[in-house]
Length: 342
Image 1 (cartoon, rainbow, N blue to C red):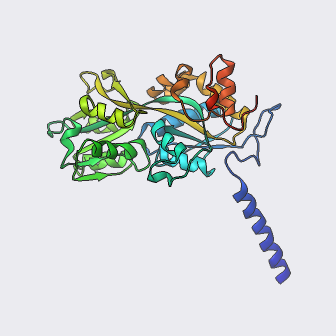
Image 2: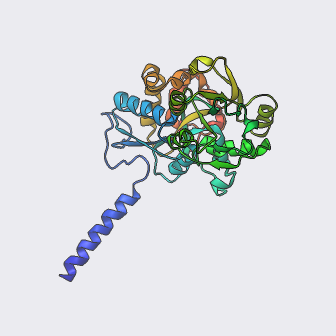
Image 3: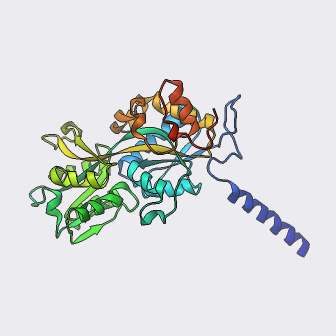
């Protein structure tokens, strides 16, 4: 009986070790088409952000394109946003993710406390997504009409680990704005708190339009504001990966004119260990089926080959390099990863 128990325990340990050994792109089971150079994972996991934000909706579009055109099921994971996606790709818990270039730059170089000083360089860029716009809003007639009016107010600053959650508190500090309270929360939770008047104002950073903003505007008269003038100049000097941007009035029916603010590019990333031929097919599918992406979110208007140069420091995945060079785009030699083979 003892011998059988030991054998059973040994078998269980072996099974557990095999499970742990599987990293990103589980190659144990494959759906690769006949003739593929490498084994493909049976399914993929894509890191998005909080429910109600652009990432979660846009991520469902990526998943739909990959499932329809490449033939691999994709699970869209709710995460804390770009920072969290980078961390999870780094340790192999995500196959694919979405990031903004600010957190990506910090992670790539191991800057800021959230990286722990560790250079996160297991991610590879695969295609441009869209610009993320810094958006702020309060209830109309609240007396809050600009970021400078937030001193002494309770403000939602986005989910911890997201672009807003990372940079909006920094914006406030740089500009000398001192809210009475800054709340990190997912978008739907933050909007609920604002509707219950537990927050005086809210903010988010995402492609437009944002579902949570539309939800608030459907129930309250809204005053939306961005960041412009001297405040914007100060932010762009401090963080040059942000840029001056304009949210067109037609993106929100409550806007009477275009809204000046700051924006940052988003790119999709993949674990460096995903097969080159699989990533090639993913990039090709997304870049050549923009109409499918647009059915998920209008932000996909910017998910175009022409914007591939939005990435200027991350290594490209070899599969992405193959696609972009195949259609005549030049890739900066500095962005070729060490594993690239001609």
